[in-house]
Amino acid sequence: MFVLIRYMEKRDIIIAIDGHSSTGKSSFAKEIASRYGLIYVDTGALYRGVTLFAIRSGLINNIGVTDPEMLYSQLHNVKLRFGQALHGSKGELYLNGESIETQIRSLEVAGKVSIVAALKPVRDFVDSILKEYGVTGGVVMDGRDIGTVVFPDADLKIFMTADPKVRAMRRYREMVARGEDANFEEVLKNVIERDFMDENRENAPLRRAQDAIFLDNSNMTEDDQMVWIEKIISEKWKNLKKN
Ligand code: DC
Image (cartoon, rainbow, N blue to C red; front, side):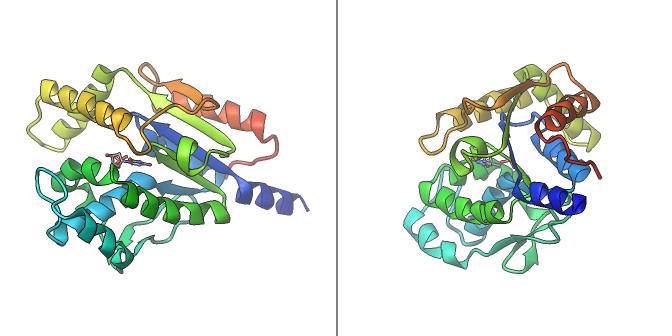
């Protein structure tokens, strides 16, 4: 009986984590999912998947989408699915049966995804995939509009931010660790530009939902954040057990 209650509660839970870029949303969401046996959904990966499709179809250049109508008419050919979305692991993202996990992290996709993510038909397309997870439930999703647009009734909403300089330094260090030629001022400029684009686009701009709990992790370690969220979760769902 106890197991059944646990299962039902987990099945129904939707945790929405929105916030600025480079705040560590995906690592945080993934860790929560892993600790509580929920499914992690990386919503940005889906926008990246559509962007990869647009690049491969020759429908986007450095200035923007060259033929938006053509892209919209092709969306029914974009079959995006996560493999093995179980026990905290989202699995790799597949585009029409091909794993595209590496390709969607490329600089080319990263440089064009915000153009594609601003288009209303693309947002509707991604939202329809995300809403399927809402039916299944038991998910932790990170993105920009999950608690405001996709799941306004999510059970728990977190809005993450951190000082732009702190975020830029984290990204700069990651790039240096990967052996990339990084310039801190350029990374900072990019962080500020992305914030501006996310917050000022017409469709589903980044906003803190009124009922979202604010998390500024400028001076927090990943462990600090987990202590913080576990307290919130244990107060909200008294019998939700960790794995
Ligand atoms: O989180 P990320 O860097 O993988 O997101 C990629 C892009 O998609 C970024 O430009 C923001 C956008 N995005 C969005 O508009 N809405 C979401 N729910 C998730 C991501």
